[in-house]
Image 1 (tube, protein in one colour):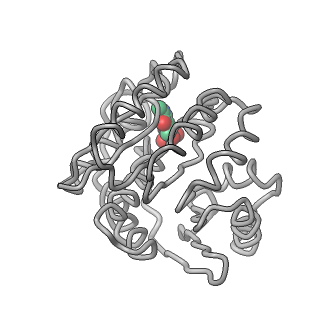
Image 2 (cartoon, rainbow, N blue to C red):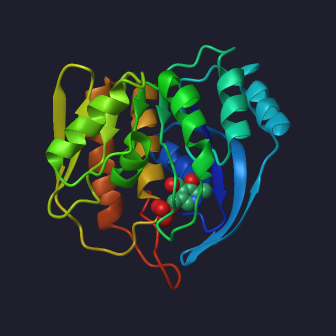
Length: 257
Ligand code: PLP
């Protein structure tokens, strides 16, 4: 069985973060492992507190996994602070990491800063160059590039700028723009477009986590990046179609098998 690791934050209500990642890995038939970077107190209505895990314990978790187990893919999600980013980069450098997907998680849908604004530079400097695929949504691509994104042409410019920060592939997710949801993949040469219908639901908690985990899952199964994204898009589309309400606020997507 393929093995896959998420390095990310815990979401107590189980819709996003580590919990969404592990559910997505299981749904793809993989063995999921987790290095926890932060614990959030969270439900469908918001984030009420965060405790970052120490750099020392993050390093030990990564070492414990890699010293013992061959890892087929890694996904990085919430990384909170500069110290966390640095220790992840320094520790992963000692291991043969294949198929690294970096989801540059910044602000939750409820408006909570899951990445401290001052840690943005470290994320760009240390994590983006290690990534096979980086998956910013529009607000994240705007923060990374400093530009305002209003349409597909702006998304293309942002993808080119982010590509020059040295990931192998950039996937800019267009869901925050009006109309049809178009995502854009750039490999330094060509653009590939992924079109999907807009699904009208408020239950979209954890969609970014789920998509990046589905991409990493497909890469672990030896798919090409273009195929991995195609499969992950199909997965998240059905997961959103089948999303449901579990509390008073934004519900989760359905991790079907
Ligand atoms: N909480 C954690 C721990 C996450 O990693 C993420 C991922 O982006 C979120 C919350 C974001 O959730 P939402 O999809 O509601 O923005």
